[in-house]
Length: 231
Image (cartoon, rainbow, N blue to C red; front, side):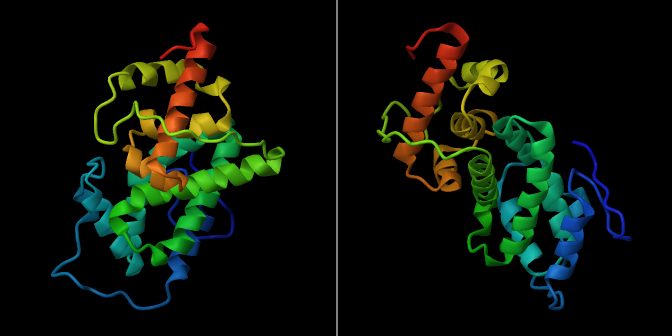
């Protein structure tokens, strides 16, 4: 993920693909003094940010809401690469993805104070990404007609999908050939490994609709790769 730099904003740390405009917006967004609701401030530098435990997201999000700059830095370190990967897959254009990622982080800065369920930061973040990606597609093309969604029962919400690893490998070869909507749901479920409930929250649709979209997207992927419409 390449680093950004913006002239005229001295003293603002830059990294993880997030430019200084985002960082300076964050640093000036909250004007109230910092609070200390816990016995002592966490050591963000020693925190294992690769741990998928949603309680880490909850802690960091709450600390962001209290105005702690280090917490926002930690959130960026935790999610910058997964977010950049997902946006690049769906956008299909590395340069466009870089621009979109900056806009998504700006929306995070502007909205995190209103986040009421901080333990769901991941699905909230990818929901922001989904809406911005769909806005970008509408700006680029006329919105296509959507076909009716039919709930597919082959996916149980909390059961492992035996094809998940296979589909993930296939995705690496065939994702770019699919429409953006299919890239979006496949990337979230198979490559970023969000549970169905989190994908549904990110896309703002029922779980049954996610199942339907996954079923249709898998069929399109197999058709692209093998010409086989089964499975």
